[in-house]
Length: 515
Image 1 (tube, rainbow, N blue to C red):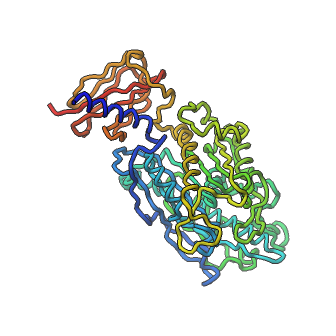
Image 2: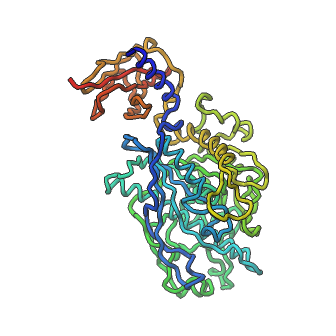
């Protein structure tokens, strides 16, 4: 009976090894904490009602793998869709941190071992401006909304870095492994946050004066940036206003109330860097913002998207069908990224852990990181559905087809995120080998406090699983023939180790027991 029990446990372990952390879901559930504050800032939404900006809280829903013992987990900051307008006034099927698709993505990523923050950001612009200056007004207010979104996601990044440094790291986040993932409208923010790192780039665009307004004043004040750093704060959200009221009110015809601001600093003193950009829909404000050395980008888009172009073209407002500004979608973004070499880290993923890589490559002209998703032209976001009551007509309420798209998106993301973030996914070679091939010896079994691993070839990494398949210890970048694992509080019982070598991995049983 004991032999049968051990055999069953070993079989379960083999299944869990294939369902490996960060590659697939190894946790059965995720905990969700709602409306966690990460900062505050001023919103433009109140301007039309009160004539002044007002300070609003910035909050997030936080997801963590339930039962996880890892102390340094990668973080995904997930940005919902919504046309930069509040729901339901945006006329969209969603637009909050409680959207069904955002919740589904977050739960799946958390069950894979990530910490996920579905973060809110400030909204507000004028999509219905008309008349001779209507298009300029729409463009100016939209670029301001996107700018505030970039500030907010960077503030969220700094919040986690600050709590890790000063607050005891309550969310157990590895702040060197951060993903910014934007869905729909959030994709505009994630792409801009990855590429727009200097205020001057707002003026350096593919179309001259693309984000500038004519003032009617003599030179040099005849053109004014649509985003005023003195009013909006710097591009990182770490500075407050320094408005010269007399000049800006004269230049903009009183568009900005005297004494008002749209910027207060949040968590200055920490960097806003992140290591991977993902966008599911959306587009980039200007292709010239991309530079060599930007974080790798994973792009998903329906090529027939009727609102955001797949290449470079005019963005259309979904609710009004009005043109706004020229932007670049996934196809052109990934062409530039390939030329710059920013996605080179994705090359060489074994087919065994990349089930959708071949599918994507058959459609993306060899640009690793681009997944064109086929769908009817009328549906630009087939991964979305709504659970809100009384949604606008045409909204998908069936989760099944949307979740199939999410399956594909997650499975394409997982191995690329492993490489971009340097996670211990162990697919240098996923072939299982016999311990004799590498001369591996593991002793003692059982052990009271430590287990020694000795091999004839260098050990790359070791993952320790409990009998439920959960990772309880991770040892990366060992690169040595001898290594010892300390018990450090592990309960009595059976565990399993996956020991990775250049040739493949070896599975070995471990047992901890008191003397």
